Image (cartoon, rainbow, N blue to C red):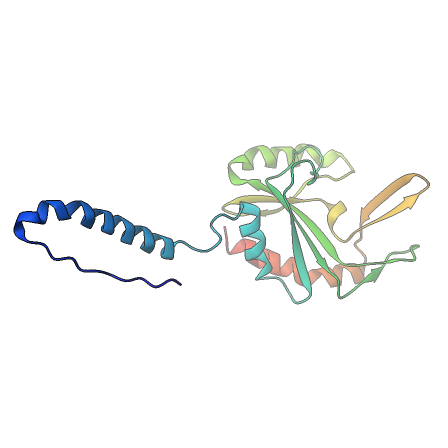
Length: 195
């Protein structure tokens, strides 16, 4: 913090009118300094940065979240457009095996955040998209500020390449489910507190 000093200026009654302008200017400067001190640090952060920072504080040990907010890079569940932002969660401290695969997978989850005024449209889209089998949207949380959507494809997601085609799927084995359970519980608690 900087040093703030106040200088008192005395004036005769004849010059008082001339002193009102500098005093008013000083009052405005003083008020600006107070507002600057009262404004929380990071108010220039995006909605995604604020949400990611807040959620990160509530994650279980070992879990991290990464913000993806660049247009054209976020992807989206089937039937929906790109969200405001996306958060990808991963725990790099543990792994699980996928049947028939040689590489291990870290538990992970992808969430898409949409503005709450879009709630009705998103819920209608989720209902209509249930007939599809690829990246169907699923409501993860309906909080005050956001409608959070995921897909079964993006829970414990792994991908493999067969020939020139990349295949991906969500993994729901007992081991994979037990490793992601602490994250799901923490996120459920977090979003319930924001309804």
